[in-house]
Image (cartoon, rainbow, N blue to C red; front, top):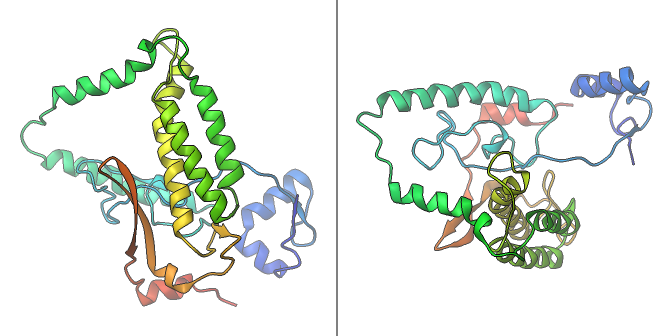
Length: 269
């Protein structure tokens, strides 16, 4: 596939706004993207969303848990401009480290660990070794999840496909409860995949549910059945929480951007 920006923007604009991409294509491929299309292909993308954090300290809604980088939701809105992830990591990585250290310093007393919770977590982690033969293969579930997300929750989304994806993810979650692995605990990739499945399925389910809820197209989210951008959706976040054992969706208002920041984000001709 070829991406042609040369017919959409002036050469000076491209070199100013996409300096690394211009340099990369020129040096490695001999392609001047200000004059000709560039060949592109699909690859793994980041999640535009993530853990909700308090902006100044990067602390999550769980006390003592700090998050930085693209796992922290809200920094980049509907899409991230190329190269912005590094400045994100530098700024908020520093904040996360600083405030995590202050939290630990000011904690006071001794942290009490619930031995029952530790025992429950240990049992859950070791359960794939103990299930009877004939259990589910973790790689098979992971492969089916990848196929579901690629086919039904891809770049162009539709309500019928998102509904089908959520149904399939539910079936995969049921299969994951019967996953079995062989071998030992020492460097066992099958076991690692089995342990990852819960998180993979959770993120997939949240992505599909949020995409179904957001009935517009914005940034990297395109709904074929809602191909327009609705300004009312620009004022809310789609938030997913685990309540009573189920993922539930809500719309929550975004704080108004200060005027001086809004001016920086607006396109300058």
